[in-house]
Amino acid sequence: MTASLGKELYVEQAEKKAEFDKTAKAAKAAEVSAKSEAQKDKKNELKAEPQNGKESEPQKEVQNGKESESKAGLNPAAEPQVKAQPKNDSETEPKKGAQNGKKPADKRITLIHRLGVVFIVLGLLGLMLPLVNNTLLRMNSRINLHNISAEDMERNFENAEYFPIEKIEEIGYVNFWPLLGKSHDDHIIGELVVPSVGIDMPIYSSSSNENLLAGAGLLFPNRRMGVGNYTLAGHRASGKNILMHNLMDVEIGKTIYVTNKRVIYAYKIVSTVQKNTDAVEMLDDSQIEKYENSPIVSLMTCYNGQGNSRWFVIGKIAGFMPYSPEALEKEYEGEGTSFLH
Image 1 (tube, helix red, strand yellow):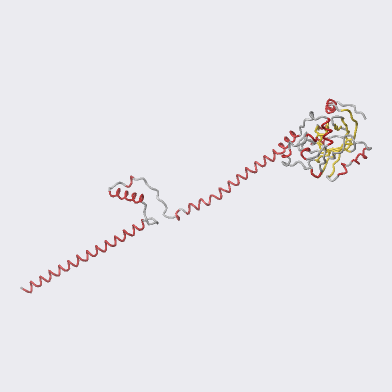
Image 2 (image 1 turned 135 degrees about the vertical axis):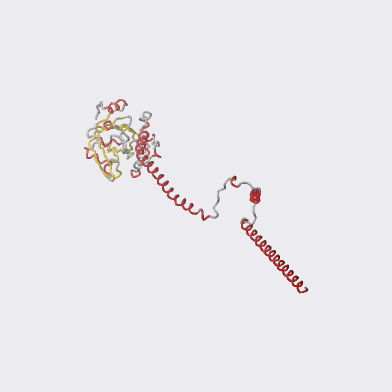
């Protein structure tokens, strides 16, 4: 009896101890699980924090709001979809590369278009520039001689100054523009008329670049009309009927007239010749020896626009008469006037 009771007590105690051990193990496992969950939560919180270590208040409020909405059982599908942002720059690199690959090509195309426009504009300017220059020269050479008297011309002749021939500049594309409108009325000493080719221009006492854009210039300011070799220079513009362009169209036997508003001198054209620029003998007074020592007039201009060649038209004195506008106008119109020798 006693042995049986002791055995039952032993079994009961063993069962209680096993149950206790089981309970203790379960509690310990629960504690370990709780600690593990806590550590996971802490790691998640650290990952969710911004780089500066502090989450901004607006972000916390948004997160709290989302948590409360999820807890309240709101439908996430009803919320507007937010476009997912790339987590790092590596996702955007292919797009950037594609864009960078297109930009140089676009720039090259734009540059080609701009250069094309520039070339077109330059081409149009090149076509229009001669027309513009001729128009400017035509306007600049329209000098009114009616207001200049014979006394003015004589005074201008007495005050004439020599302009070196080597300083005379040719007409370029735009180099003469600053000189337009700057011819000197106080240098006008006469008028040159070649009716057969439509030349009618003032004669200046100086062959300065400003004066030659408006008329003919006397190369040697001490030479008078009707005496020795009366040498006049003028520019040959590219347009007809401008300055001395038509001088190359003259014919032997036609007449050249020069006047100082006191006397009209008539020269009969006897020679036309092309010379190099260094043919200075054509300007010398000794040239009259070729024409029986008679006074001559020598008109000089560029040969067909060539800077290294000159065109000379030589006229031998044919007669003279007192000046009158009507007499000169009749000669210009080809009606003819008798000249006394």
